[in-house]
Length: 165
Image 1: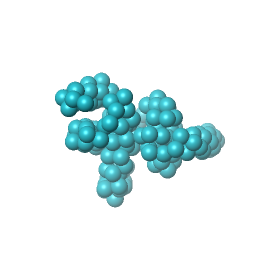
Image 2 (image 1 turned 180 degrees about the vertical axis):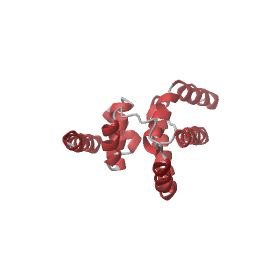
Image 3 (image 1 turned 60 degrees about the horizontal axis):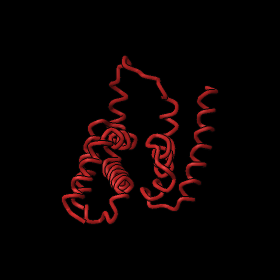
Image 4 (image 1 turned 90 degrees about the vertical axis):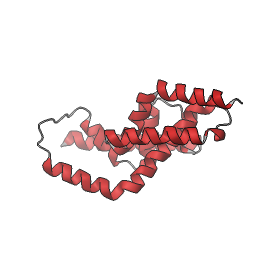
């Protein structure tokens, strides 16, 4: 396989779906700058590890796996800082620019464990098929389906709790 051809395919794919990549990274870190950094680092990792892509037809799932893993690595490295930053922001927030659109859903999604939230985000926000999600997360298809079912059940329960308040 021609190396230049792989480089061009990666570049075209990354540029074509840059908004999707950003949205996925943002769904993990909840910060615009950090999400951009994650996308940039993922592109760098993809270019550096292009030899691991055996079949160009798997470019989408291959890159999503890199993006998800980079997002998770970022969260692990910055977990303590993130909690402190959020606490500081809450204390100085004036509340003037509140946007309640899908607030309950976002909060409920954030309450899910990472591996469950990833399945929901990849399925409903990134519109990936079960097989693609399984490949991105390096899981069995049935595991992905089970996690999605449990996530949706949990979200329904949480959303009902929010409606009662």
